[in-house]
Image (cartoon, rainbow, N blue to C red; front, side, top):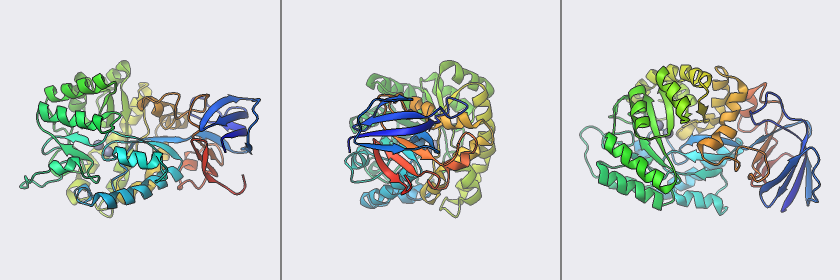
Length: 411
Ligand code: ZN
Ligand code: ZN
């Protein structure tokens, strides 16, 4: 099937307060050719989506497709072949929740991306950074305090989220290797974190000189640096160094929120992960010292989402889940929806997510030229964000690149 005409598509992408009037969508060779109330298009097949809400395929701007367990030190030591096999299941489940594109913030490599592109694995379009860059004792250093064994193998193992590099030359080489290996942007751990043993939140990891060098390399390549950040001082320093995408941002200050809005930087909050970790972290294999760190950032993150929204900051949808927690990926929709309007929550996984990914017009939208990635939902998500949860239960159609990944018998 190379061409399809969809009829009676009432579209919701978060840019309007109501679904559109019924539209026709012409799809050819995996892309959208035209969207209008009446399209003159001689298609091989037609599909009537009357009574349903049609949305762009959802985008999750912060995932770790290779995190097969919440104990990331254990995950790092798994054989790459086993990690790839388990990742294929994680990715398929993401797609079946309606996420047709995900941005991986550390771990997934070009091989995994190619496995999806070439049809060996069924999964979302993967946007990758390769390995996240971390310093010794930083967020992807899983060694304990007295363990200084060599971890140069982190750069090669599929099960690691990041690699360790110290000093400008090592950092620059690592960044260049990731770009050479297919990274589409660079990810740096620019603050401490909760899933690692030796880095308190607010630890100003890497020097200004190191971070600035990283931004120069990314910009020279035509891309950007995204950074793992919680603490306000760390965020200010990252912005000063030219970093333009803030992951988490739970402890961002009011003045910094204004600055981020003014400078057009992006923030990708990941509230669902703290919500779950605080409640059920131990059950999912998170070490006890990490569970204790979660409480500090959980409430703060939700409060900041309101302030970021009010300041007009462009936010991406992020889940950041690990291991057995992946099934809660869609939980960020209703969780955010308790604090900010539903249309804003939806935008963060559609048009605004595409801005974060620098793929505007390609994904997260139903317009001519975009990939034919779309979902049909029973009911109106603007009125009920829970319709986007339930492992795709309320989505009779999930389409990626014009191909129906899921199509209910009733359609
Ligand atoms: Zn992070
Ligand atoms: Zn992450």
